[in-house]
Every structure is written in structure tokens, then in C-alpha cells.
Length: 512
Image 1 (cartoon, rainbow, N blue to C red):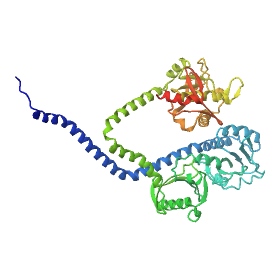
Image 2 (cartoon, rainbow, N blue to C red; image 1 turned 180 degrees about the vertical axis):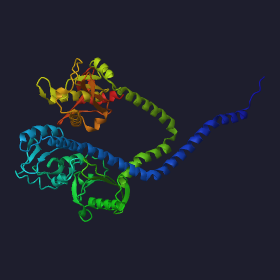
Image 3 (cartoon, helix red, strand yellow; image 1 turned 120 degrees about the vertical axis):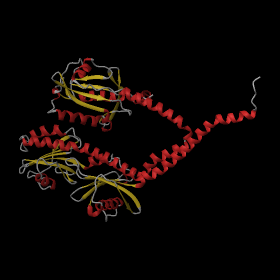
Image 4 (cartoon, rainbow, N blue to C red; image 1 turned 90 degrees about the vertical axis):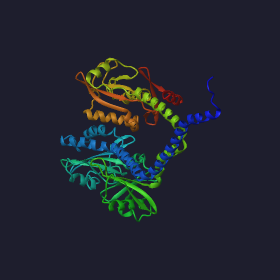
């Protein structure tokens, strides 16, 4: 008979069997407490660096947005300077000037006025209106232009120097406040005007904090600033007014400039200062030749930044303290989530043809769900002139690709795959073609979706085609045409419009 074990001898076995679980739970609790304590301490250690990083990232984003908005002025003025050097810009022939300059700047909607100012004689001036371009109200002597500081400054700098930006002044021939970008060649000054109201609307989209202040500082001695609390409109102040005007924003800007000056004006280096018993952070970036009218700065109270810090690090602390028992479940959920995201990411990424043979193979496959051909970018082959309907036709396909699974659009290729080239669109050079493409994407799709769209001019059989690669966008994308917005998707080899009532269901099903 086998020996029997008493109940008392079995209890230690059960206790021994439970020890690994108890030990594991204990270790998890100790680890969780230690991790929570470490994260809490770390929050205080990284607070200053996080504040500085948040501020730096916001101003860097704003700076890039301004550069994209203002760079076309430098590009257009460079073209005008070349034309002037070639003798093409004669203010005595306004009809010819208008035929040259209006097509150049008209797609850049932020350009409000055009000037060609010789040393003497009549001044060529055009002003954008709702009805098109009209001659500016400038007398025959050219006064109102030649007596401007920006005109004198533009004539004094070398032709190879960057463009000169004026202070805020009434635009000659228009009368409304704005900025003028100018440069000279051979004694003639060419210039373009930017309306302050247009810059107000653009600057209002800057990602500043709830109580922050965006500042533009000019060498001439005045400051332009914008604050969400101040109505999100650019206001102008002379440096001497900042500490005596009584406006709270002026006092903060003045205190920031004094602190910055005491630090020898470091660029791209966030610093902290106190004003009226409150802690503030500030950073300045230098003016970039040709694109920035002045130094750009961002001032934000520490309270705005701490709310963002709490949203990041505070959640981590509570995660360790309150959800320790669900850690493994969270890992599994996240693993599945990331796996699904990666699968969706992999599905929307396609390899771009990297040589002529691969591109010919893509064209030889014909049109499909993810490949479409367009003969021209803007030229109506039947009407034999540029047509907006031609531009909107291929933009519909771009939006449809973004809303579906991505795809390739080739411009300069007929429906049957014949290589037509890009000459029909009648652009002066490749740069003008690419600029027109960028402007159409910005106007009708949106700058916020530009990272999902890439385009490049490629050579095929001694011809050129334009290859547009669209990745699937996680957000719904609309084709904008004035106040009208439409949603398109790809269905087989065709583009279809989806009614508003179906968009939400479609997006949820696509991401499911």
C-alpha cells in the first residue's frame, strides 16, 4: 500500500506552488512603485527641457509656414530681375508688361500689387481686385513709389543680394496697409506687395499657445505682434511704445526683449523670464535673407506649456500607478493595434519607379485602380487654351487617391499610354511647371496634405512626363474650389464623388 500524505503535509506544497505567483506579483508591484516614483521625479527634472522643446517646435513650425507663404515673392522677383536684365520690362509699354507679369504672379494669391519703377519716367503698377488686375493709382511722376524707404533701400543693395522687405506702410497705388518686397537691376526697381489683411489671415493659423504672443521684430525699430487673446490680428508697435503703452501684450513683449538683449540676443535658444509675478518663456529665430521680413519670436506663459507637459507626463504617471494590473492586456492590445496600423501603412505604400525602364513598365500596364494618365496639366486640347476644368480633372484623381489606397498619376501621357510630353502646357521652364503644381495643390487640396503627395518630372523616350505619387491619407481630403468642397474616391479605374451622407461610413469602413 502506498503511503498516504496527511492534509498538513499538503499545505506546504500549495504554499510552495503559489510562491512564484506571489513573487511575480510582488515584483510587479515593486517595479510599478519604483517606475511611478522614477517618472514623477523625472517630470521635475525634464520640465525645463520640455518647456523649451515645446516652444522651439511651435516656432519652427510657424517659421516653416511663413517661409512657404513668402518664398514665392523672392522667386517671382528673381524672374522679374532676369527679364529686366534682358530688356523685357519696359514701363513705357504697359500692355506688354501686363502680358508678362500677370501670368507670372496671378497663381500666387498672396501677391496684391506689382511695380516696375525705372529711375525716371512713368511707373508700371498693377493692383489685384475681385474683378482682376487693374492699374494702380500712381501719378506720372512716380511719387508715392520713388519717395518710399523700401525703394531707396532696394536701389542701394547689390543685384545679387537678397530681396528687401519694407515695414508696414500703405501700398502705393492701392492705399491699404501691407508689406513690399523689392530688388533692383540696372537702376530699375521691381517690387511686389503683400496685403496686411492677407498676412493677418495666414498668421492667425500659426500654432501658438492659448495665451502666447507671436512677434516679428524689424531692424527699423518696430514690432508686429499677434495673440489669440488680442483677436488674432497683427498689430504694430514702435519699440519705444512697448513699456509705456499700457497694453498687457506690449509690456510682456518689452520685458522679453529686455531679457533677450541682456543675454546678448541668442537665436534658437529658449530662455525664461518673469513679468508681473508670472513665469514666461521666449525664443527668437533670425530673419532669413530673402524670405523673412524680420526676426521671428514666440512668447508663452509657463502655464500654457505646463498644461501640455501634464498631458504628456501626467498620463504616464497615472498609467504606471493605476493600470499596473492591466499591463499585459495593454501590451496585447497595443501589439494588435500597431500590427493593424503597420498593415494599413504597408498597404498604402507603393514603390515609386526608380528608373526609365520601371516607369515605362508602369505606363505599359495601362490605367488601373492605382494608375491614371492625363494628357496635360492645364491645357485644353480641344479649346487650345488653358482651362480650369483640366486642372480640376486631375486634382479630383489626386484627392481620390488620398481618400482610397493611394496611386500614381502621370501627366503628359494619353489615355492609351502614348507619351505626349509636357510641352503642350506651355510653361517657360520646369521651375514654372513645378511652382504651378505646388500652387494648385495648396489652393485646391491644402498645404496640410502636401506630405502625402510627391511629384517629379521624369524622362521617357526623349520626352518628359510628370509623375505624381499619392499616399493614402488617414484624414478625409476634399477638393476645394472656392466655397465648394467635394469628396472623391477611386472605384476601379475611375474617380467617383461620394455624397456627404456616405463619407463618415466610408472612412470608418476603410479604417476597419
